[in-house]
Image (tube, rainbow, N blue to C red; front, side, top):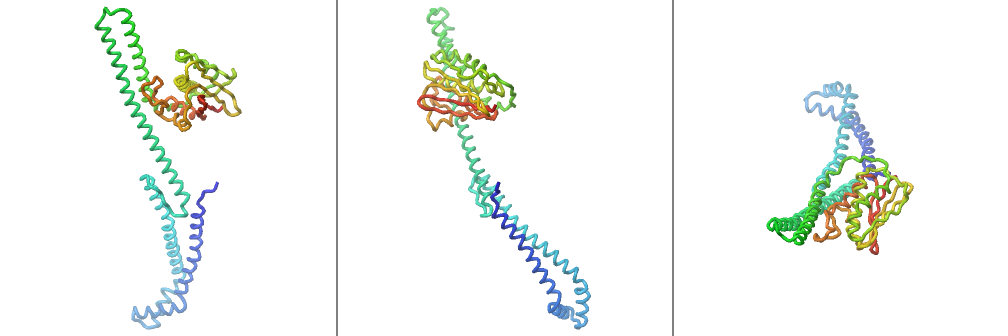
Length: 366
């Protein structure tokens, strides 16, 4: 796989190559400087500085310079190498300074601009910036949804709670109330209490949403048996509106998964299907084995979900029905939790909706 740093690699290589002839040139200059006409110039310079005769200046040159030529040349070469190394390092360090400035811009949420040879790094850092901005936006949106939902739930709790208190007060103040009227008030109070329980459960669902990160405990699961149990559990809810569950799958399908977590996935999907199905329609659960995975689909008949909402329904605190007054109103966490559990198993989940048929498909590795 190509790294994309070809320009930077070529520029660094070119600089290193140019250091060699540069060092050679400096070496030749040093040798010429210490011999030939330059030597005569140095003798003359010694004469002027020390005010001595030519012979004395020549002797000084021979003793201090000529006799130590190898050591002086070695010192010059060492100094030249240090100088070239320092210049090369300073030139190369500018890329680190660019990256440092790029990181500052990344933290500030600004556009990152680097030199042309750092184009690949620039693209990656800008991609990270866009990803962080997207996640921040999604987190803020989810937080806003949660805040709105908590506000709505708090408001909704007051209504059934007020009714429960009101009817219980009437029953308490009128012990001789006619039996029919008392039964009516008790029935209304019980309905409001059930509604209150549902709202409290939604609060509980919100608070425990981020506490579901424990490790999976996988085992071999008899999938048809699990789904049959799910259908039996939902029978009381479904029968109220004439809905049924049909299982269409072989009897010997097994999956390797966490049974408690996987049960929650299908509970949430079935709960969603039951809430949005039309009356007197069937919810069809199908399963089939593929070479590398098992696919389980849950199909219900109801309103067609718009294309733009199919992905959004798996987001936290997202609800298809924005009306808080409906019985389908939930915390908007069921499908988001289902998706996280499926992903934790290495699978995937998606939804399709056409002509009143909505299908949720779960794909789990064998």
